[in-house]
Each structure stands twice: as C-alpha cells, then as structure tokens.
Amino acid sequence: MTRARVWVAGARPRTLGAAVVPVVLGTAIAGTATPLRTLGLFAVGLGMQVGVNFANDYSDGTRGVDTGARVGPTRLVASGLASARAVLIAALLSLAAAGVAGLALAITVDMRLLWVGAAALVAALGYSGGPVPYAALGVAEVFVLAFFGFVATAGSSYVQAGYVPDGAWWASASMGLLAVGILEANNIRDIPTDAAVGKRTLAVRLGDRKARTLYRSIVVLALLLPIGAVVADVLPLAVLVAWTAVPVAANALRSVGTAEGPEMVRVLQGTALLHAHFGLLMAFMLWLT
Image (cartoon, rainbow, N blue to C red; front, side, top):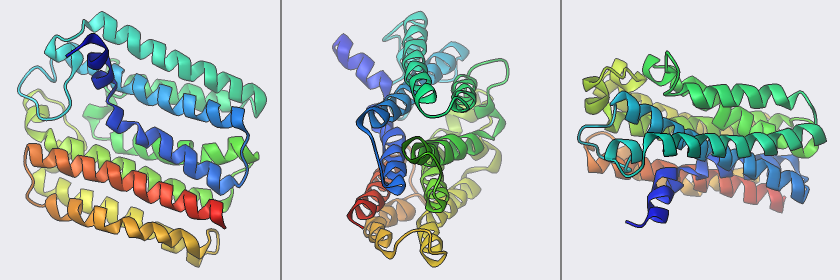
C-alpha cells in the first residue's frame, strides 16, 4: 500500500457521509444557501470527521485497544503503518482546518457559534483520548446524536438561514439516530476486542443481544421521525420519498440479528449507506418543493 493510500485509509473515507449528509439536509431545510457558507460548512464537517478518525486511531493505538486481531478498517498506529506522532499531527491539522473554517463562519454569521465549535473540538478529542475517554463510559451515543445530528443538521440550517426551522429539529434527530446506528454497528462488531481491553462501550455494557436490539430500535425510530414531522406540518409530505431507502435498511436490520465478524462490517456499511440515502433523498425532495 502506497503512503498516500495508507493515509486515505486512515482517514476512513466511508465515514465521511456522516459529516456531509447533515450539511446537505440542513441547507435544504433552510431553503437558502450561499457558496462560501456552504463550503465553510463542508470544511468544518469534513475536517472534524477526519480529525476524529485520526484522533481515535492515535488514542486507541497508544492505549493498546486495537493491537489484537481486528475486523474492520485498518488502524494506522496499531498496525505500524504510521507512527503515533504522525497520526496525532494529522488529527490536529484536520481539527485545526475545521476550526479555521468554523471561525470564519462565526465571524460571518454569529460569534456565539464559537461556543458550539469549542464544544465540538472538546468532544472530538475526548471521544477516545484524555484521562477518561467517554467512548469507554458507554455515553458516546449521546455525543454522536448531539453533534452528528443536531449540531450538524440544525446548525447548518442556522448558518444558512440565520434561524433554525422547526423541521430541522426533526431531521436532526433522524440524522443523529442513524449516525448512532453506524456507531452501534461498529461497537457490536468490536464487542470481543473492546471487552478484552476494558473498553466498556454501551454495546459491551448491554451485551451482544441487547446491543443488537438497541441497534434495530434506533434505526426504526430514525425512519419513523419524518412521518411525525409531516403530521406536525413542519416538513412537506414529499420528504417521505426517503422511505424508498427502506430496502437498504431492511437488509441491515435483518442481518444484524446473526451477523458476526466480517458480516457485521457489511451491516455497518449498509447503515452508512442508509444514512446517506435517507438524508440525501429528503434533501432532494425539499429542494424540489
């Protein structure tokens, strides 16, 4: 593997939809967009996601979390493909790029956004780093819902329109829950290796069977929320076209009951695909209406 491909793999490009799709959907709900603000939002989202990925790689690698047999994306530090120092620098540079873009948006839109940005940076660094990584406390799902759902989606609407439309809160919850579903699929896959090194994620704490039930509940709720938004008359009926993504969900929901090892990787990929399809279809229909 070339050096360039090593770093691309370390950035985990398949996770980037979790940063991009909420921006697209939040912008569509706002109903207005400027090129510079849109580019700024994408820079913040992508910078944060890549930074989190590298930061997790560094923290887990240096703590010995991923030194054993691993199913899933290659970790740079644990595999020896890159030094811990290099991965840490990559994480800090990515987060710094997101910070610069966020500062520009705050100056342009509302300086109070700096507080949101600061909280996002602390959350990014504290996920698997710091003295008490919250990923090991079983509360990571709360942070993912908050930052990949409400901050990313409703925040994008606010940056574009100067306020948060009611529909953005419902859409934020759907996007956040599907992002939590991605995390839960990842953590179910890693239950054996996480438990072995004392990383007590929510999936480890619940146990395999209950974690799989939680995954299904999260995904189903995320799919149902747009119906509530339509009934509440804060999103148009057209957004329910997003339900054409349900066949994608059906496969993941069915497979998660018995999937193990590499099969859970496919559940994870299916959940990420559902997140992208569902969010982008809602955004597309919003732009049309």
